Length: 69
Length: 240
Image 1 (cartoon, rainbow over the protein chains, first blue to last red):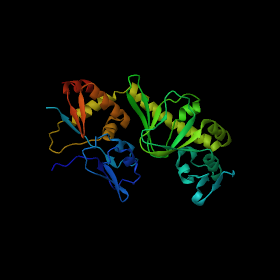
Image 2: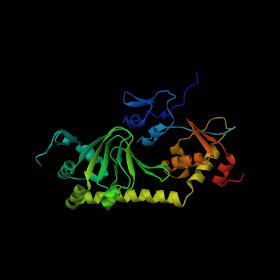
Image 3: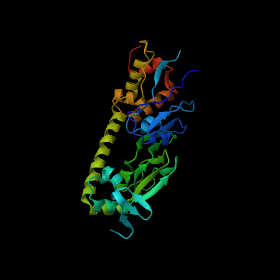
Image 4: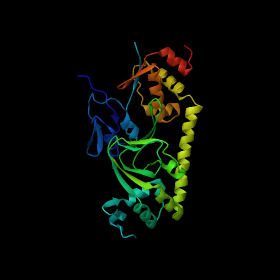
């Protein structure tokens, strides 16, 4: 089964503040212990708000740039 | 100390049934370096407001009555064009303030503000702020410092908007990263693009939206698809 691309979380940088969870409208992020983890879901529309609000730069919403065939 | 407030454990200040954490207040640039007495005076004038996700806190063009600090949650400060297009000016995180400039300037709200998540705001009325500034010189110094930083940020934004061609630089970056045949996929975030283009992340979001509206790229989940490479090269100022 193909993996769903999700925001990448640097758990060493995450301070567990939960801001990303509060702005995520699709419950794609959860706190496990005191660290944020992404849950694979196609509901994530790549709004990148979690990355924008993260105060420690722990979240990266990566883009691949491709040319349309 | 007034009859309504009392200092409790760990320096927290209790107001009726509301507790304003002194430690939190001290972490706000406006209140850095204030004495316990001054912090107490500030806490007594703070109004707590709970907000829901999507709640509009301020409307652009209305009289500026309160200065706000985010205690928890995230607030989006934005402007809306006559065509209804929204431009995010800033995301306000815990400890940061918004609506400062119009409150001090005595004008109208320069932008609207919306809660992006459930949260708590601390507000101070304009009239209370004026009294505090008169009575506490350290607070006045802090305000000058905060407003100076705000001006620096705005000047750099003005430079981006008027003198530099952020969209052109972004177009170059996209062309450089597109269809890389080097084997390993090169992925990048909006933050990476901002750092490479020497601009703010907000400007990258705006430029990507512009390129999409012009039909040059299509934003997909996890992908930026270049639909019109020729047009993108023209925007980038690169010879075909």
